[in-house]
Image 1 (cartoon, one colour):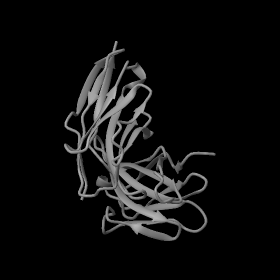
Image 2 (spheres, chains in turn red, blue):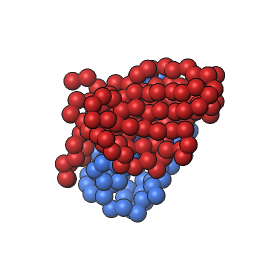
Image 3 (cartoon, chains in turn red, brown):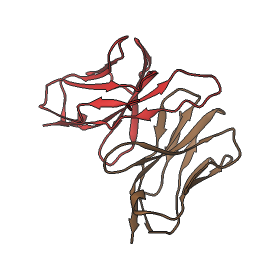
Image 4 (spheres, chains in turn green, purple):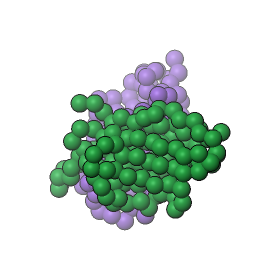
Length: 117
Length: 114
């Protein structure tokens, strides 16, 4: 059972380009979370998705950022017209179907380091 | 809103000694969970230990244990018999309920010296 897979591991984009970050959750996991880690900082929540639904996007910047988790395929975090301030490590985590009373654990991928030049 | 505070940006411990990393949190919820994550240079986020708020007993995982003081909203991590492989960033985190976002502290960088 492979872990949470993120690709690419490293992504370099010029200012104004689009960045697409992919996350394949663990097998059987239907919840995906995206976090951003700026240099020397902790992880900040961005968005929480279930299959075909956005559950909580309170951490997403209002412009240029979007996320999806289609019925088939990986979750995608998309950043349009990237700027230097978007340079960060982006982590995806996944967790299984909820069971009331059970502590469902989130497992992290290794992250994608985005560098905007 | 939840907040998690780690007031020690860096800590150092000698190999085989014990070190305690501090964390305080704030939440108005009664159903919440607390975590310590380790992030080595590889960047992988590794779960070290977790604590359910409704449990009074402090969680323990081998050399790692927590001191959970619910009234004081304190959740410190103790690492016993420190090893060189323990050197990493350590993040304290909280989560409300069984499926929601994690709120992280700013981290403590732990150095382990010979």
